[in-house]
Image 1 (cartoon, rainbow, N blue to C red):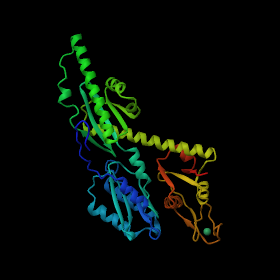
Image 2 (cartoon, rainbow, N blue to C red):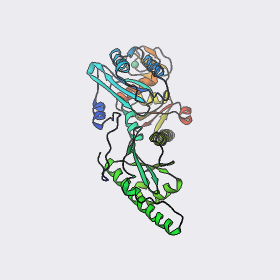
Image 3 (cartoon, rainbow, N blue to C red):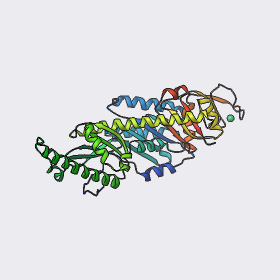
Image 4 (cartoon, rainbow, N blue to C red):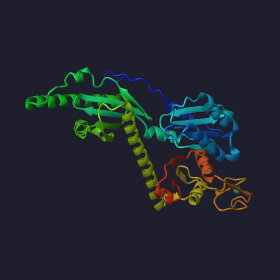
Length: 376
Ligand SMILES: [Zn+2]
């Protein structure tokens, strides 16, 4: 990326998923062998290596008899021999029978999920790109600023922003009022230069989200100098030392992105609950299953980790909760199913319905941990 200000940043080390890759995954469809989409939280700061292997085994167990042997072997081979342990989240798309194999490492944690469906389950990646997408962090002080690019959990300092041009204005004493006024004028000058740099940077990197840091006073002053469009793109402000370590800056930026993510989940849940009250949505597994079979679902919302058992027809697509011997639709034998939620998620993905796995909340839990917004 080259910037107007002449600053260069090298591409990050984590694999960035491209729009083209996502598009080809979105178009992939397999009528014969289902696609395994596997999201694995391998964040070593959250759990040791043995634990994610356990989580993997338990997710695969839930797929029971549908467990795709070749795909599971490919995943295990990767974890045993190729994975270097540097990611916080790993996403696999595998359909060995159709030649599909893709591993995407992320520097942000992903919630564990294994899905077998006719299509790859990519909406969590879209959400991640949206939520942990490009942020610019500006640590500002009177002498200038440090600029960082924060993307998908990775932080990169844009070198040279508190450059010689700005540093040479740095004044020693501030005792005499005249010197103080001079210093204020220089600070004003410096901050204007930072405003321009920020604007150029945001434009050249197509970055729509801004995090400001510094002392409360400097942040407020800098904010007041920003053009309205940039002021509108501020997603968080942090009080921190301009010379903080990169790790500290990354952690604080990540905390803002995490909070923003949780907020977006809560907004989606509220929208769904409001829709349900007005008849444009449903909540609870029973109603959701009915709406799904009537093909009325537009967006399916499921609490992370929610599972439930029920029954499925051995012949048609019937799914239900109440134990039955015969399918109420076609009269074929019905069979107990351990994971009706997994099945509805798979089928929804296969039909191209938007599926949102959200971090659980009390209101969603009360509503049955699952719900949907309807088409009509
Ligand atoms: Zn049936």
